[in-house]
Image 1 (cartoon, rainbow, N blue to C red):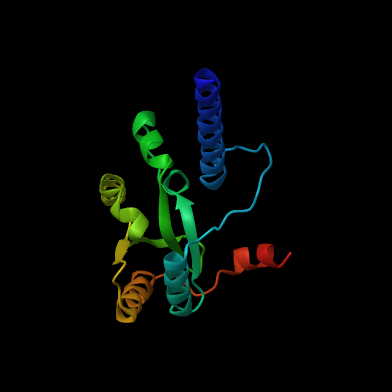
Image 2 (tube, one colour):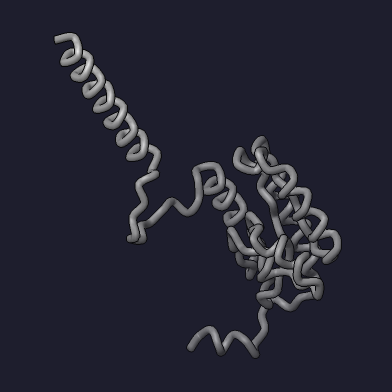
Length: 171
């Protein structure tokens, strides 16, 4: 009789462990599906920064977010380019001629865990002599205004509209 009770307890305990394991994998998204599904593109803090930046953009400028450094920078040494290509800029401001006016890195809560990545991005931007700005998660609206004033000063020499490209966009 003791063996039967012992076996039933073991079976019950095994069943509980298995149920807990399945529940953990379901709630931690470890069960993988081969179907695509939509995910949230920007978290709440990044959305706020995007809205603040967009509402303060100079006339004719455009704002992009989560742009790969590989599409912004070039390097003849492939291993070095490969290391930075997987990183992305938080925000990219395009001038009226659709050239890159500056990059803006937002050091939100997700960036704090990756200081080494931010350091690599900073080095790459300095090497490329690319104008860049940084916003911390404690930024103030005046910081955004200051950045946009600097961006518009950087693009003083750029004409407000370029007729050669404007026809292409209307098609």
